[in-house]
Image 1 (cartoon, rainbow, N blue to C red):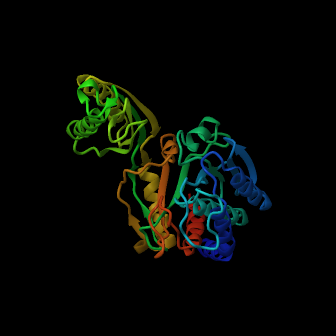
Image 2 (image 1 turned 90 degrees about the horizontal axis):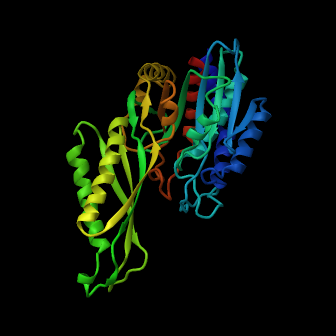
Image 3 (image 1 turned 60 degrees about the vertical axis):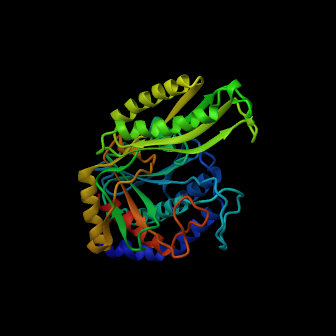
Length: 389
């Protein structure tokens, strides 16, 4: 049976996939700088006879045709970039690139899709249609590699009718997968504010327009705007992660203060309306205290929507492969993912793969690591899902 074939090949290729992951983990590259990763992926695919194409400078697109290749076309996506984090794991394949680390599992995503490609190529007489492999750069940095690939035509020639994405989940045990239909992940915008006042000696505040005091009021009042203007049934988060000033000291009031933050929600119309509210109110608050501000919003990723029909079908295929008890319902989350760009263009399903490691920590931390047994599950599951679709 096909399921047994997939499981057998996933087990057979597991050592090779682990080696892929360790190589990528040891040589991480930041967003849009994945040149060696791109070369590595392309070389592997072509060694198995998979046709490839380079897009967005460091993205790799592969095409695998089964029987009757025009009957159905789907896409599988993995991201390849690492994060600007100094790794603290003491492991033989620790990052060799100072200050750069695969702390979000993109090394696992890429190696899993490579293993999937290996199986799909070997079993192409057992399934019908065409599978487009998208090894994507720049998920961690605006404007997002997905948006660039879409602009360059990654969803054309051949044109897939649906897309699947797999992401590691450190809170799930190995052997399990998580899935949720509908709204799954939030939109994410970056906020950059410069509050301007008039600096001077801290002992003579009457001669100054204190931008630090203005900033403190601004942060508090913007939080109130979000809490009092948002529909309580619509999740919305406004968080500021950095405050700093040029100059200033214990006895010096600076001329300006900068704050950086993020805005997240699940509704596009409310998202755009809130942009206007925040900018207008911020300028009024600053003006009322004698200062001014530049309030810039960098529009980021949209919300991620898992197509209900596709997700339900994917869930059933997961249950067949993993067992119903190993497929769990995931909650919506305020984190963001540029896979959302694909979900705005076609039916999409983004699911989670259990990789829990007793010695690891959460995503985007210096000690993040996975249980590599999960790679066998991830490769087999994605291969199975692709062939079933």
